[in-house]
Length: 258
Image (cartoon, rainbow, N blue to C red; front, top):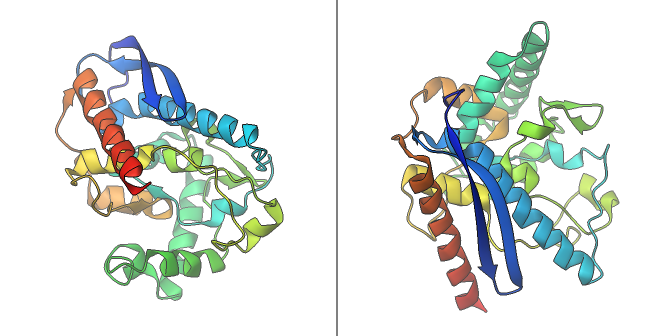
């Protein structure tokens, strides 16, 4: 768990991209922290990438079509890094009663429906998802219509603390298609890199370019209970440089594919 009162230092970074430069200002822990301690800075980074991508898309005549009150994407399988899963679990435990029990009940109901549909092994990475069937499993879970346990009145109740992948998912296509998404009907805002994936790779020591083992948001408390220990603690600036190094690798591979 992140240190509640860790000392931080304000850092400003300019990330050069083929389409321009992304400026990020964030507070970074100065002492040794697990990846959870770096999440606020990484969320700020993701927000900067998303704002950059959305501006480029709007410039090209494809403005973001997402709007408040549209929670269709909040029924998808949201991929999060292990550090985020532990943070989500901690966030639930920090909630006052009766809200804590209410949210825990929503998670329990979601798990029950996933198990009844026979999708739990695959969602936990023990079945088709682990063998490359992530899309099929994701669509099967989506068809169950299970809302995110944090979704209330079709809006995110933990908006400021929402996972990085949630921040990175914006579309420019007609919102009417979001209820039945397909690769042909959904047009996401293109981003230069996926911050959540870089975090997951760095935290778990996954080589760049390899598939990223993910924790589905809906299973976060369950996964965190079985995996309570985080990764090694490292100085905040050093850890940030390592994650940013993953971005550079992603960008290089992206250029090679062009």
